Amino acid sequence: MRFNLSTCYGMQIILYLARSNKIVSSAELSESLQISQRYILQIARKLRDGEMIDTHIGMSGGYTLKKEASTVSVYDMVSLLEGEMHIPSCIIKYKNDTLHTTLSMSKKYIDTFFSSITLDQLLFACAEEQFLKIIRLAETHIGILENEKSNNKLC
Image (cartoon, rainbow, N blue to C red):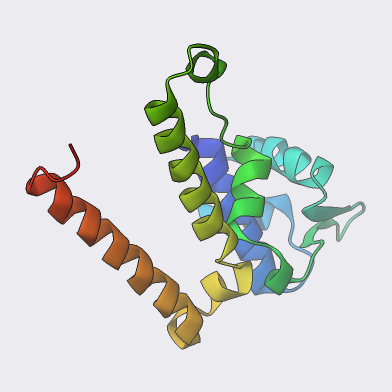
């Protein structure tokens, strides 16, 4: 899996707006995040069209987060900016059940993990015990899988 640069920038913009809790100009976003203003405008258009941010026109215009930080998940941000993960139709077409099951379970795990982390948890990660529990659980699962792989127990 590989995220586009615009996805990473889009998530940084959303986090910055949530943290600021005010109207933020594209110039401020550009300077603070070290992203060209032109690229900010392109990404902001996609975020606005996806109803993640509001646009404010005028001399003191800019952007604000449209939703409460507690209602926006990493899944929401990634699926808006990157698109949802899909299982290739060739897997279904040729009825490769083991590959289809593996990809389906991977998608479900990633979707569930991303859905479990909200924007406010990212903003206040140090104070959020639940966020730390989610990270520990993911680390445990990854450790188990890596251990099984190294012991050749997967196949």
